[in-house]
Image (spheres, rainbow, N blue to C red):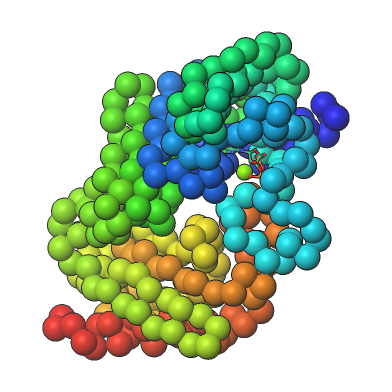
Length: 322
Ligand code: ADP
Ligand code: MG
């Protein structure tokens, strides 16, 4: 109902960056190859996401805005075997409950659908062009939750969080062409040609991209690949170390520690690497259902994975002339 949607909104969509993340993840789950994200005033004025994914069937569009209406898992068992970024069916109803939403979507076959919602209530349903994909426009964000609105920081801070989210998504999806525009200025544009180094160059600068060392290592349970920057390029924050499990950006102190250990004595104390680390594993070995934002994970064999990461990075540097 309306109240529980608003409560869930407090957990899932606490700020514009969280909304951008949910909407882009939906676009990725829908198989999009180009995703445009356009914000005005860090999303406080509007958030627009346009994708070229599968679109939503005409008769399913209203359902997508109801609570727990995910099309991605069918049984309880699926909860422990998750292959998509979304699975809770929580994002759209939560976002809709605290904003005005315009959605245009089409599967590319027949007419598309346009819905307008206010605070989760349907105001208008009309036909839309049959361009395959989905366009969502969120406006009047948090108009009915003044407390949330007050909690938000300056537009500058919120825009910074959105940039972080876009960067992480672009680095983990190099085969998707992203464009991110804020206040009519292009912030990020990737080609979608699959080369992570090019995406890292866009984000961190050319000088970083020329100093990357690749690594690849696998065990029975895990496969780890990625790029680490040579140790002389380092930063004073862990922020530049991006770790993904099955394509999902995660934060895990133990795994970050294992990666740093791979640098051994190469990094000065208090300095951190610029790196993208991709971990692939059987989804049953990782529980992403810890928190609604799905950033924290629980791993069944954390020590084994840590050891693999440390050795992969050590080897990469041993094979490179530093
Ligand atoms: P979840 O992603 O957890 O399934 P959401 O609330 O984020 O839940 O989305 C609800 C449903 O709406 C999805 O399961 C999907 O079927 C549909 N949907 C949302 N966004 C898109 C999109 N961009 N393209 C296609 N389908 C979408
Ligand atoms: Mg989702």
